[in-house]
Structures are given as C-alpha cells and as structure tokens.
Amino acid sequence: MEHHEFNIEGGDFTRAGYASSQVKKMLKQMGVDVAIIKRTVVAAYEAEVNVVAHAYSGAMYVDINREEVKIELRDQGPGIEDIEQAMQEGYSTASSAVREMGFGAGMGLSNMKKNADELHIESEPGKGTRVVIRMQLNATTGD
Amino acid sequence: MRVSEILQILDARIICGEHRTDYTIDVAFASDLMSDVLTLKNDHVLLITGLANMQTIRTAEMSDINCIVFARNKKASREMIALAEENDIILIECRYSMFKTCGLLYEAGVKPIF
Ligand SMILES: Nc1ncnc2c1ncn2[C@@H]1O[C@H](COP(=O)(O)OP(=O)(O)OP(=O)(O)O)[C@@H](O)[C@H]1O
Ligand SMILES: [Mg+2]
Image 1 (cartoon, rainbow over the protein chains, first blue to last red):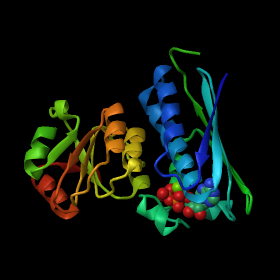
Image 2 (image 1 turned 120 degrees about the vertical axis):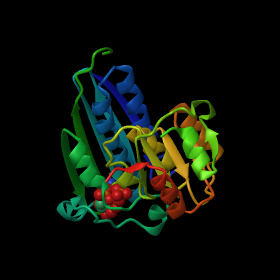
Image 3 (image 1 turned 180 degrees about the horizontal axis):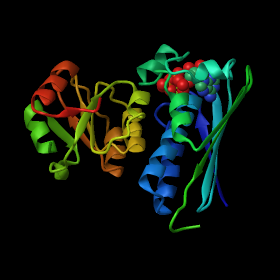
Image 4 (image 1 turned 90 degrees about the vertical axis):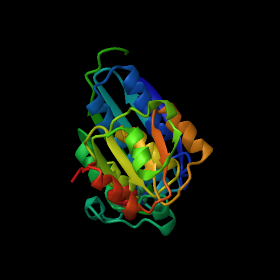
C-alpha cells in the first residue's frame, strides 16, 4: 500500500482539483482502465470541491495498490445535518460565490454515489465531514 | 466534426492546442454547471461554456473532455491555458452568445448528448 496526503484549503477555487489530478496521474501510470480512472477521479474531484465549497479546511488521504484505492476526505467545517437530504439531486446550500465558480447544482454527492464502488459519508454538524470512496482497480503495472 | 470546422463556423480563435485542429468531436454539451458536466459518460465531447476559470479546465481534465469553447467572449487566463496544455485540452474563444454558438453548431450537424 502506498500512502499520499494532500491539504485542501476551503474557498480556494484556483487550486481545487489538484489532489484529484494527482490521483489521476497515479492511476494512469499504473495502467488502470480509462473508464475506472474516470469514475474514480470524478468521485474524488466532487468530494474535493465540496471541501473547498462548503468547509474551512481539510485533507485528502489516498491509500493505493494494484487492486484498490481508498480515497478519504476529512474536513473541518459546518458538517451536514441531514445526509439523506444532501444526497438528493438538486439539493444545495452553496453560496452565490460558489455558484459563480460553476458549482452548486446539488449534483455532487449523487454523482459520487453513482461513480464510486463504495461511498461512505459521516458528519458531525458544527465540526466537519468524512467521506470515503473505495474503488477496485485491477491495475496491470506498478505496485 | 473537426476542430478546424468548428473554428470556421464560429469564426473563433484557438488559443490552446493549435496543432491539433484535426481532433474530432462526436457530440456537444453546453453548461455553466460543472457537476452537470461531470455526469457525462460520452467520449469526444465538445464542452460549450460561459464559465472561464480553473475549475472549467479541471472539470474537463476529470471528465476526459479534450475540447472547450468559451462563448460570450470569455477569456482563458494564462494559468488556465497552462493547465489545458498539460492535459491536451483544446481551448477555443468565441465572441457569440451561448445561444448563437449552440445554434450555429447544431445547424451544422453537431449532435447533442441528450
Ligand atoms: N464537505 C461538506 N461539508 C459541509 N457540507 C457539505 C459538504 N459536502 C456537501 N455538503 C452539503 O451537501 C449539499 C449537497 O452537496 P452536493 O455536492 O451534492 O451539491 P453542491 O456541492 O451543493 O453542488 P454541486 O456538487 O452540484 O456543485 C451541499 O450544498 C452542502 O449543503
Ligand atoms: Mg458538490
């Protein structure tokens, strides 16, 4: 298992996506199937943007080997009061600043659910949120 | 449709990927909402958008989209062009409105995704 960590700054839309981009590079290098890469990085990117859009700060922790990848995001932020409601397509509390950046359709969490092999979300309102994405990789090369 | 034809139809300017005007797109999608773009499953998608920021390029990177038209005379920054270059994404700037941009391409036979 290889381990990587990336800090994520709340509100910093110029850098949002950097961590997911690094994950994409790793998966490409390992020769993972393009369809699996796309599902993985779309889920990771939505989760990363959610930290930038909705939380104050956070990090992405990536554990990866040939068989699988676990992508965990932990943030300090307002948390999610009702996760079931947040998962619904179209539900969004995004600020107008976030909407101006092209986000706030309320599609991110359902997008993550559709793309991830496994998605786990837990949150403590007033403290923060933890999101875990797991994907099977079946990579051809690398370790 | 080839990028070279898109440039002609839209009377537009290519600002990244100048050497790949023979790249071919199969379908087009227009949106300013990046999470909508991230739901797409097609290959060879042309993204038409009025949103010109780093996240437009990041979204294309994650979605394997290799060609973006910025409508409404939106300009790509130097940072955006550098990131697009790194990811083999062609960038086109067009002065027409979203409606006109889409209308002209539709008329010329570019297919929608939905
Ligand atoms: N990390 C987080 N911290 C706090 N709230 C969150 C977090 N992630 C999601 N939420 C809440 O869940 C809602 C739905 O999230 P989702 O990603 O589906 O949509 P969005 O981020 O609002 O818009 P989109 O993802 O389409 O750009 C958010 O508007 C927000 O209220
Ligand atoms: Mg979101």
